[in-house]
Amino acid sequence: MNSQDDWIISSLLEDLAALALANDRISIADLVEALGARGFGPLLVMLSAFLILPVGMLPGLPGVVAIFMILIGGRMMTGETTLWLPARLRRVHISGHVLAVSVARAQPAALWLRPLLTPRLVALIEGRIATRLIALVLIGTGVLIFLLGFIPGLPFVLSLHVLMLGLALSTRDGLVAALAYALMGPEIIFIWRVFT
Image (cartoon, rainbow, N blue to C red; front, side, top):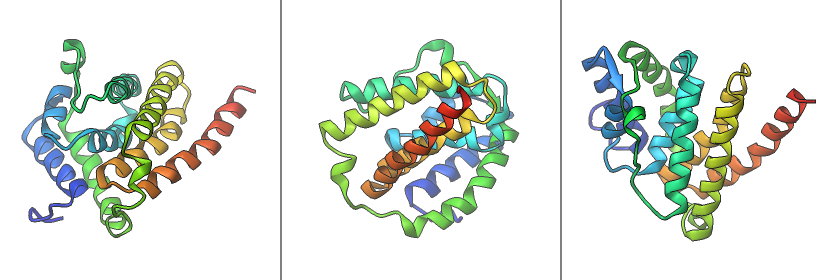
């Protein structure tokens, strides 16, 4: 990707790569600040990607991501467009090297996705009902990951629909949101089989 690329996902990855290369350790507050005013979509993409990419192997990270999902869902439920972080969460750090490796692994997927994502069916992601539905999904997913994140593979599985919702919000692609909701069916079946 080149520095001229202004696609929201590409520019997000470029900003994260620059942050990772400039710092050995990066605070959660720095990560959120790096996203600027892009909104909750790119933040959800980043958070869910953390559970899919190598950085997700760090102990305790699924719990931190889960808290973020709950906070974002709560803010969306009340109509807020910015994220508030408690001071303790702002001070959590991750390795700059691990973040750089994760961003490098995400870039090919971003290039592949770019021509597939376009504004369409925006009613599925905009408006009070759509926003509150997404908020409820985020809160529910966050609670599940926080409580059950110790089960191998579960945070990864539950992060997939969050990644898709983040992409949908970032690109105003309601079709991707619909696919995210459809994906939740197999995820629920997976969780059911884990506990039965």
